[in-house]
Image 1 (cartoon, one colour):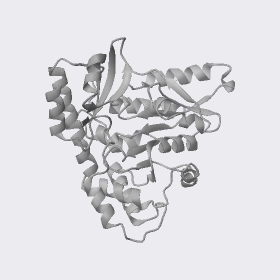
Image 2: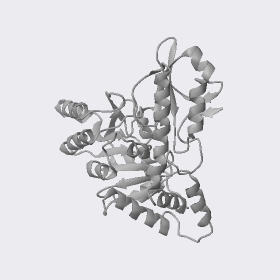
Image 3: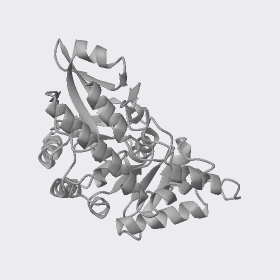
Image 4: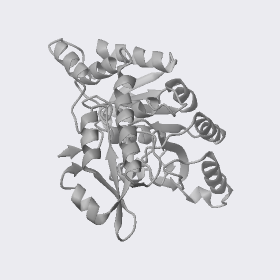
Length: 340
C-alpha cells in the first residue's frame, strides 16, 4: 500500500528523534520553562527578524486555533474566515465550543480577498441593527490554504491594511507553513508574516515534529496567555518535548530543508498526472494535489493507494487529495506514477 493520505502519517524526522534521545534524561523545568524552549524561541525570533516576539509552544493545531481565537475575541465577537477554512469545517465546532461564531466569507481556491473582508465589515457596520449581531472581531486565514494555495506578499499586505483599518487582528494558521516557505513560487517570508499579522503559528506536526505548534505574537501577547493555554488543555507539563523539537527544527535551517522534499515530490507527481491526462481541481503549488477521478477509477486506486476523500465533483466523479510530506520518498512517487 502506498500512502498519500495526509502529511502526518509518519512520526518525526530522525534528527529530532535523536535529539529527544540525547536529552531524555536531563532534569529540566516543566511547562516550557526549560533551556531548549528558550533556545528555540530565540532561534525563531532570529528567523522572523522580530526580537520582541512572544512565542508559546502548544500541542496541536485545533487546540492552537481554539486557544488563540478564544483568547483574542470578546464574548460578543466572531471570527471571519474563508468558508473552506479549517476552523469552519474540520475542527468539529471547536471555535463555537469556546462561545465564538465562525463567520464564513467567499473565497477563491481557499483564499479570501481584502475586498471581500472590507465589504463584509462595511456592510456590518452600515447595518443599523448591528448591535444585535455577532461582531466580526478577527480575520483567520491559512497559509497555505486548505487547497494548498498561497497568498502573495501583496495580498497579505492588503488583508493586513483592512484589518488595521477596522482594528481587528489578523491571524494566520501556519499548520503547513513550512511547505509555503519551501515553495519556489512563493514571495512570502517569515519576516513578512511577522510584519503583516498580529498572531500566527508555525506548524510542527505536519512538518517533521512528533507534535507541536509554535504560536507567535510579533508584537505582544494577550495578558496571561499562558494561563489560557493551560485552561484549555493545550499546555504540556513536559514542555521540553516541544522545545527540543522546535530548537532542532530551527537549527541549520532544518525546517525549510526537510519541507522542500514535500514540494519536490508533489511537483514530480503533478507533472506526471498531467502528462497521463488526469484532471486537477485546481493548480496547487504546494504539497496537496486535488485529483478529479471517475468513481470506478477511484475504487480501483483505493485498493493500493491511500488518499483522502475531498468532495463530490458530479454524479460520476469525485475529488480526492494526494498529499506529500517531508518524509515522502521519491521512489514511492515513481511507483504511484507507474501504476497510474
